Length: 474
Image (cartoon, rainbow, N blue to C red; front, top):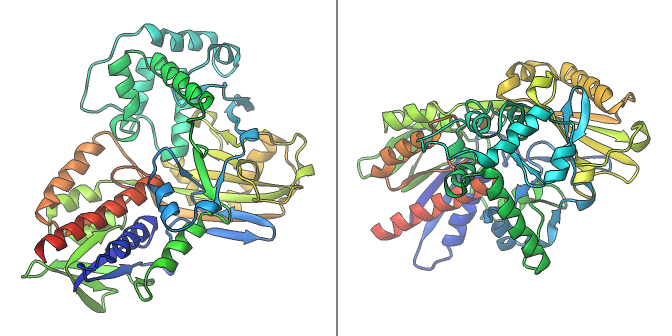
């Protein structure tokens, strides 16, 4: 029998342990799986709570379907019928500008417009700013570099207004990061590819938009919206994966406190400082700094690089309201807040409009986001202060003066890995250093993507890699 231990019981570790259990069905493979989680529950930042008739998410509320791995996992574990697409009637997004909510121009995608007239009409940009963005169509290709910050790329191609008023708040919502520190290659390499292949990013995006329109007209478009969730919340994914693991595989309140290499090339894992487990392979699905701490006596260079992958802390504040508490009924997924507005929140989602069945018909569920690398000090506020900041912002931006029906504050310390310039090179060094240990694999959001789909992919790939190695030496 071969024994594999997975360290970390978030979505990455659960995906790895589940994939190991699937591979275990091969009759030629005698495999025991152990999943260790330091906290008292599985799922990491994913958690769903019922508050009366409200369905409230503590962390991620959905996953992207363009990256297929989470979608395929849901299909394999019988959750396809539970998937829910976004509500198309509310797909508008607002941007805070000079204290007002301005609609993001229709066809504007992260960095640039794909439709001319909505872009010309929007008050979000000044006329000099619009002209500067339009000049991107005439600009030559930039020099090919090993890496460039996202902020530098957007300024170079589109100017400062595009960065400050749209790119920064939209990207900030994904990575909770400072775009001037964020690696373009590690986060949005397709924009660099567009520049190099098509010269103009706007032209490349126009071409891609035409192709999507043709796909819809021919009926070959995607079955699901860009983002999907589960009818009962993202906790369904965690619970289903945990239930599909054999009894006794998952152990909570069981932190891995040490990792050593045995003389016969197997591994010894210390658990909670009280127990040692000898295993044939290890999957490290813990945060990068924690993985670095465990590896410091095994591969010092990789451990040092792992500890240099920093993270930002974020909090979510969910509030329930009566629909009549809003002088003007919300009509969108929510709004983002540029850092230059100097407000106390990064963004706010109208959760009950984004997905169905999140609140009764006469209620509104909101979720505000706080912290990130650009407002790290706000994460330190206590819960009452954080709640008051959010209510003040809602009063200012939405004219909501009523007290909420309930408030839930969730904190996610060091939950968002920061893909700084040079990130890909650092990850490559780490992985190269660890190639000498084929029965050791890293997985998680700190390496090749921060979303749930990427976490699932890295967890499953780690499982497949160590099993392949174990099978070859059996």
